[in-house]
Image 1 (tube, rainbow, N blue to C red):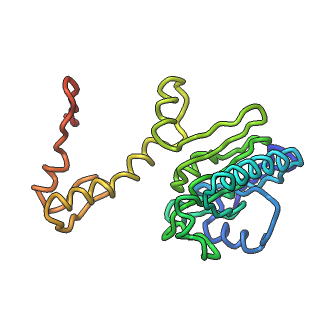
Image 2 (image 1 turned 30 degrees about the vertical axis):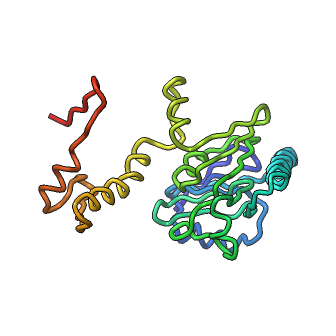
Image 3 (image 1 turned 180 degrees about the vertical axis):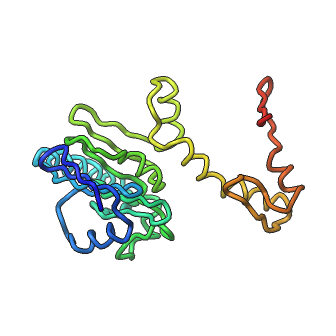
Length: 236
């Protein structure tokens, strides 16, 4: 049975919601006017206020006018539902746009994040405080840039190294958890490892984080060349 909380009258949080239930609810809602976010069993539904909608439209007009003046092709995806069953996360940003990948998704009726590139830019307006980490969900869904307006200022966030450096200074949590960042770059490391070994297949144990049955690959994976005087020590 799900747990329900209502932080505000226009804000409902449901817990212990399965992925099939989440998808069934999306289908039932259809072209709804709510803001929805889902994070590994927790579902949040918020009804946007008039102030929220005014700020959202203002930012959308800014982006669309700017790209038109600069003759940049973009695809406006509005508040489409972006979700990944593999990550068990989903979000409906206030606005989102494909820019670099506009030509890739131009003729698609829906964006499937398991096979399609995510939007290059998402917009979030924060009038009602979310109970979920919507920025972290966007980062996990590989959206590279997020514009956030909190009624006072507009932040342009690159969901990667800039946020990490800011958090080193502020001691605030990063929008993308370290574990998520670590896991997301593992396939790239393994691809480079395979290429360095002539393209041979690599068997990987994600739980132990070790190469299986290939001592040469495991040794090469652990080889780290650090810039002096820095060193990297493994576990004892």
